Image 1 (spheres, rainbow, N blue to C red):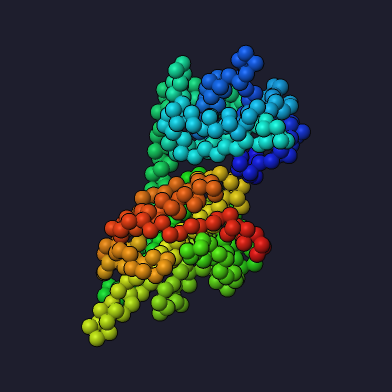
Image 2: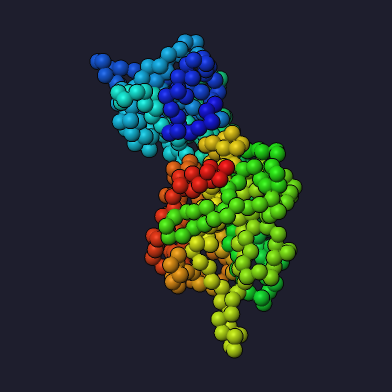
Length: 413
């Protein structure tokens, strides 16, 4: 379909749909809005859209374009929606009440046609991990499923099958992340045998839909990853360019961990990226001497280290899903701090001590990684959780600028 998200589309993209006579199918539907007494019939529009979004979310995901007329399923001409931005805003507010359960991921955009305020509304919803969904309307409580060019009510058997399918899908995600947790603990033991202290941080990004990139490397480095971005109080800045010597092939992926050769370093960072979209950042740090005479040691974690993992992982996930041709793919993010022998002292970006994480494992709630405009909000939520886990109030000191970071990456080629 489109290689952009709805909010990134321009007038030329919409006109191309008509010029190339796109056809409705499993993942594409065109709509024009009904009128009532010459004005937009908002309730009818809302109900039409809720039905189509439910059908796509329960099936394979799909695009709904409102403002294109079709003849026998083929795009015929553009019929703009008046005051498109206002209508879209009202519709988005209504979905919390008209779709049950709520869609966790919904991409929307209004494509302006000239400067009249009229435009085309575009919606994209991926296959939902919370399916089955149903309409929650006064006259319609049905579950719908997309079949070809039609959205049809589901039978009870189909609803039962879809419930089981969604449950098994989440089980597969849980199993994959449990395996990453196990491998991380094993690597931790290899890096720092019992009695040597030290801690590790893991950030695992796992796609919630099937992705695949077969040819992972180009000139020795992965095709779909970020150049390292540094994190500080002013935001995100391009720090250095990773060269071919850092990366090596692994089964169905690439890695630059080199842990075996770097065990003696005070801090070691590693990355792994797999063809199925799994991305993982690991950081290991030795316990540092606090008092040589008393043989006291401490594990210190600076906020910019954990933000480095989080932000670079988000950028890598965004680049991977675009490279895989799945710009709207949702990721699950799991972050843990593991310190088997002592608490971890937490330091702010300014370098001041601000709480401690307990000895053992601190595993944060699982996060949903949606579209790029939501990255900054996700980082803010994580920052709050991080300081709360250290039994402190949120410092709210980190203001990432992901658009600036992507601009820096593009300028580096």
